[in-house]
Structure formats: structure tokens, C-alpha cells
Image 1: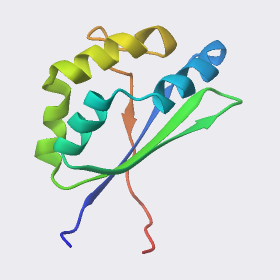
Image 2: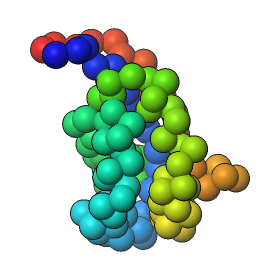
Image 3: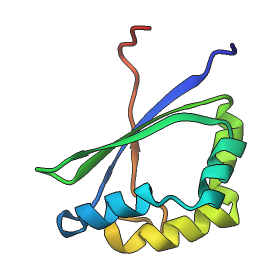
Length: 107
């Protein structure tokens, strides 16, 4: 198996939108799942700190350059538009996120 790149980031969901955020992800559009997988995504998880509204996202990708292109897809842009009312976003409606540096990994 090829080594995958592990990516982690933090985002923020509004406190009054926790349930809706979870619901929308539990009902992930089939085309969004297909788009993510087509861009080499594996083991995508999002965790919520209910006290702060901070989200921690973790995923593994086959290739970072391919992953970076997911944001250019129409499906991703539609997803951002759909999620924008629930969380902090940039002007293009992408989630405000901060990439995290990996400092420890145990396989």
C-alpha cells in the first residue's frame, strides 16, 4: 500500500447549529462522497468540541496535489454553499480552517 498523507485541520461550527451540522454530514450527498473518493480521500473524520464549537478534521489522502483540486469542483462549491449558514466561512464560502502540523504518529 502506498503511504498516504495525513491531514488535520480545525474549523468552527456555530453552537446553535451542532445538530444540523451533524445531520447534514450523516446525510452526505452521494456525489460529495464520490468527489472526495475521486480525489483520493480515505478515513475522513470530523470531531466536535461541544464546549467551544471547534471542529477537528482528519483525513488521509493518496496525493496532496489531487486533494487540493477538490475545492475546484462544482460539487464541493455546492457543499460549501449548503454548509455556509452553519459555520465560519471565507468569502468564497469555504470553511475557515487552520491546518495543523503533525508532531506525533504511532502506527
